[in-house]
Image (cartoon, rainbow, N blue to C red; front, side, top):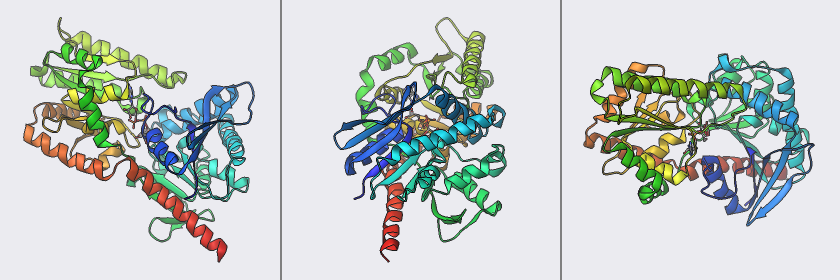
Length: 465
Ligand code: ADQ
């Protein structure tokens, strides 16, 4: 089988099970090990000037990483990727800014990374590129005459045309995406936004099922929802129930109910609205005062981007205000923990709680929703309250699906989750577990790689003919 090259902005830490290991890291590492492969991307370091990739071989996997200069980092990463694309792709045009120098930096860094990688590519390699930092990466490789199959998977939502068009170089970006052979999205609606943009702009048409001709190229456009390994999570959650952090929380709660939320601290996650809906629960259903706490775990990320500093302040303000309004000597309504936890401990904390409260304003998929369900005790499972704007909502009808902009509806959903009878909780949980097993992390990876390798086979047949 052909060698796999994975390209992502950050090359994931090499230690498995590390706290930072999310779906991308866990999912693709397996595939890289299976066929042997190369993982290429930014080392996370700021350097004085660019240089050749540093290579680190571990077993069958080679890690090739490059540093970024301060200017590259500011323009490509902090600028266009995280201050333009991230907010826009999450429908926050109010937080998005456009600076043409940053965009030029984004294109320049993609070209630089492509050039660095091109020296390492062999003729039979297939290349799988991840996420919004690298939309023009295949375009840059094609400019260097790389003809290998190249696939792209977007972990975030893909916005509807009206929103996408607020980014001035929108057409150039979508055209660049059409240099890939396979373009994959988390949900049907993200995929549809991409297809609609192309068809309504008369840039191309859908031909056979899942295939488009656009900007002079033929590409497969698919939906590949990322998953988890639910049984491994269930096991970890059960085994770790006696760990210190878990025991501490259990003691601190002294029989009170727990509503649990875990997110990176990001404005797309709807944290302020979530706190306010919890406040509304305490107002609308005062019988819950003193009986339930919201535990919000949210470690800061991208803390050098200004909007992230603001969300942190806003959240601390809201938690303080709500706690000031309701707290009793022996009860804190909102426990807000600004830190990371070891993954397995997190799963055990999920299992301890009665409600998983996952209400992003927009989210590509949201793995926390899936992890929460997997971590539950099947004999006494907690209830998932899930935003309709998380990609996961397309796959999890067993959740109480809410509109995160409707605080009263969210408060009502929390109240019904807290008092849901055991039989209904069990039925919802087993339905969702079956779906999580049927569409797990290896399903996601294999479906994408099958499509990409199919392109490789078709291309080699055409070359031979
Ligand atoms: P994220 O926006 O990072 O990912 P999510 O899917 O929820 O969001 O993944 C976060 C991961 O980090 C989860 O595995 C979670 O357990 C872990 N995590 C969160 N907080 C933590 C903490 N305090 N300590 C330790 N671990 C923590 C992006 C997209 C998502 C998409 C994923 C995968 O934004 O929509 O689901 O990629 O494609």
